Length: 72
Length: 372
Ligand code: SF4
Image 1 (cartoon, rainbow over the protein chains, first blue to last red):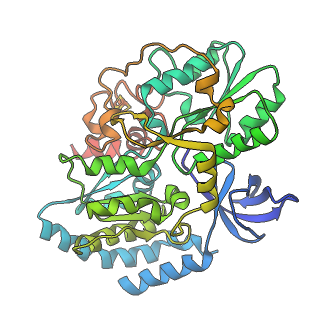
Image 2: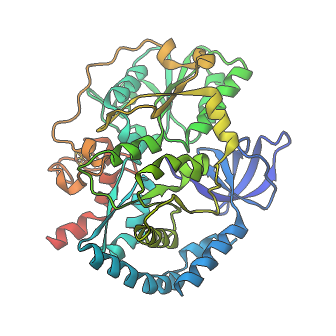
């Protein structure tokens, strides 16, 4: 139930309430009303049919680099 | 997208080689294994499934906490949900993992076999659609979940109001996670050295949502779910242990902002109000749940649908109440993997895929019997 999955936004619906996302190759419709803003191509975290956050890709890379520096 | 980088095997190994001496050092300094609690059920699964639990085992005990929403739902709530299914004109809509949760007399699965109209949905929005498609019926959605799930349910209530849907109801049994962690910190019997905090709850409440824990000065880190997230979060806990003053660490910055998802939080504030529900194992916890706000009371199943439930009791011998507090583990239950299995679950911890018993049944049981 608590599972949330990252998916890529492929298309945003006309009223900006829904979007089609790509999750492991399948296209799913999700709600995007919980997001302040979202663009196609971005990755979002989807939970119970709603996107709950836009994934910060830059931050993803930065955090990992920081760990590499700290531990390598 | 670089997300898979957090699963990168060779990188994980390199990081682990650096982290192991740190763990060893801390282990020797404290003179025993460190006890870290993973609050979230998805973390319990992730630690087992990725093998990180085994790798850390020489130094760290990972204890499952109150992080499976189905498991912490009080027996009386479960019975109430099953009672709705028995009403003639009611369609019960639910996430799939509620189906086999044992009530005092039956479960939803059995009720469906007896003719009740129960429909599994993946998203609460589907429940609202079912209401619109069935105007002659009353549709009840079973609102079980933490801060992560509650916003999607709040959205359906807002839409039901906007669209004047008059046959949609929610039985709100949502729980808030920080009060449960706080109650564990107030329990003097507990020896928990640090907490791995739930990543997806934190997406909604932010690092700020956990600040109330800082007065206990306990190491706590918000974590993601990939192997490198799990390993680095444990390293952060070790580093925090060495500091005199601890602050909540955010090791899931790609998804967790300081103040979380403000839109979702505002919505929760509008549609729900905080109340003090009973949790399985914990009993009543102050300000630890969300119930439907009086402005939305026409959608509150509690207030609008009468369904009499039996007097609640749990299966004799089931230790779920202690397991959700991290005081016992599945191997402490005599029924584990004997009378109680995923096919025939006797308690909620064996039903939900995030339940501790179900996770240990799937991943840890064999290792345990081999080590005996
Ligand atoms: S093994 Fe079954 S009966 Fe025992 S605590 Fe877990 S769910 Fe309850």
